[in-house]
Image (cartoon, rainbow, N blue to C red; front, top):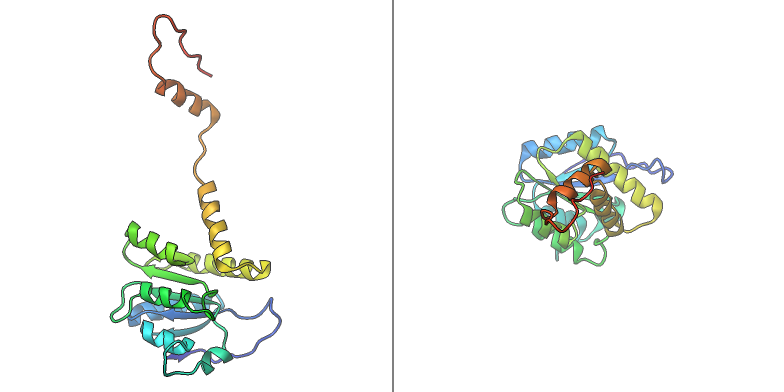
Length: 198
């Protein structure tokens, strides 16, 4: 396990957020670790779901002294890993009474809608497509800070986020929507007046 050794904790505003990054690919671990460090996260990287559970103290024959010493603010996990998938890790975390409030982000190079939906329904905060970009990491950090400052649970912020995404659907200008509505109406019969365009 690789861990950064800065354990200084100052005021809650300037406290460094800690991310547990889980990926079986050494290259992907290095990339995500670099992106997180550039964004001022404290980072712990592990190479499997079982190592993540061990670090978090969820394995049956381990104690959680590491977790007690270093609060984890976010877990980012690859979806496709041998042994335990990221989805299975997500389910174990969300079924834990002590860890279920920690936001979990799933990362994958596969854009499979049913998989994405299943992860979000199970409680994932977000599903990121690889390669993860610096803008993705910064957006996550903003979301975590906003959630912590507002005292909300991760799922509450997730519901708001989904609502915001729905709100960002394109809105047609009123002149264009009027023409579309007129063109979609059935043709006028000789007895009915022709629909008036805007």
